[in-house]
Length: 105
Image (cartoon, rainbow, N blue to C red; front, side):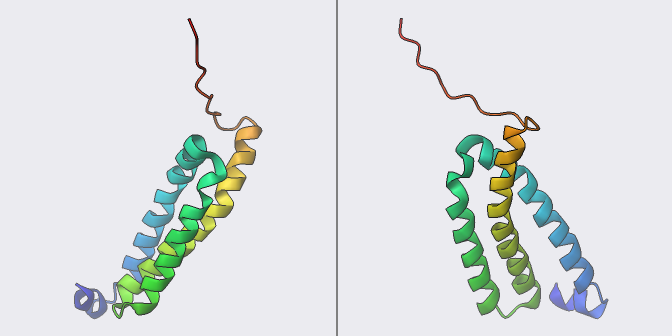
């Protein structure tokens, strides 16, 4: 696959398309993560980013390495976006999750 992409000069295009899809995937992830867990889950994205950086450095395949790097830094960016999403929820731009109310009968 990598040879096909290199032979036809499509490697950059493949990385660009995959980057677009990875970033697009993280947008709803930020919204859902903040909705269900608030900003408490930021450390998960930190861990994912560190793992992505590690894999990007140790993998020899240039396509996989580049995509792991994009994934890693998208994970790091998600940490910032979680806190920004909290502000957007406070402004009323996104719905706030209501806490479950125990109703004693």
